[in-house]
Image (cartoon, rainbow, N blue to C red; front, side):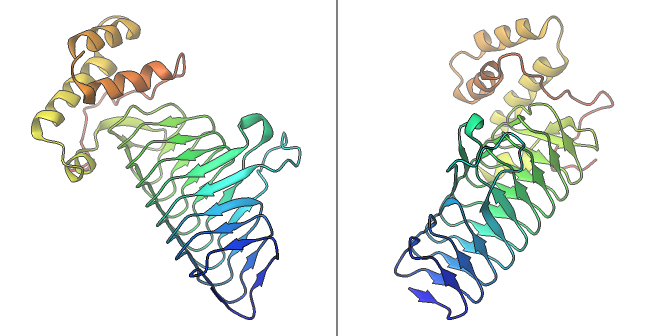
Length: 271
C-alpha cells in the first residue's frame, strides 16, 4: 500500500495492499479500504465504514461521521460505499442510527459531486449521480440509475424509484415513481426521463407503454388504488410495468408525487 507520511492510519484499519492514502488523510480504526481505492488527500474516514474497490475520494470529503440525528445513541452503526465510486470535494456521508436499521449504503459506480450529502440510514443504488449541493435526508431510498441535478433537496423517508431524473433545485417531499422526470421548486412529475431510458437501451415501444401508464396512474379517472389494479391486470405479463406497480404497492400508504397540470415535458425536451 502507498501511504503518504503525513497521513494518519489507525492500527485497526484494514487497507488493501494496492490502496493509496494521500497527504493529510485520516483513516480511523474501524475503516476498511478496498483494493485499488484512492484517497487523494485531506480525506477523513471514520466510524464503521467500508470503501469499495477502486473508489476515489477527493479532498475534504468526510465519510462515516455520526448521524445528524437527536435519536442516535452512539452505537457502532455503519456506512458502506460500493466499488468504483467517485466522491468529490466536501461530500459528507453519515452512518446509520440504531432505530433506522443502523446502516447507510451506497452502491457501485456512483458519482457524488462537490458538497453533496447522504444522510443517515439512506440507501443509494448503483449508477446514481448527485450533482453539486444535492442533499438526501435521513432514511431516503434511491433506486438504480437516478440522476439528481444541482441543489436538489430530498426530504427524509422519501423513496425515489429507479431511473428517475431530477432537475436542479427541485424539492422532493413525496415518493417518485420509477422513470419519472421531476421538475420545479416544489417538485412535480413533469414527464418521463427519456434521456436516461434511452441510454439504458429501452425502445420506443417501452417509452410509449410507460407514458401511457403514467397518464393513467397520475391523471386517470377513479380512485388511485383502482387505477393501480387496472394497470396491474392490463400489464400482468409486462415486467417493465410490473416494476412500477411493485414500487407503488411496496410504499403502502405513502404519498406519491403528483404530475404537473399545465402539460408534461420529457427530460429530452426541456421545460
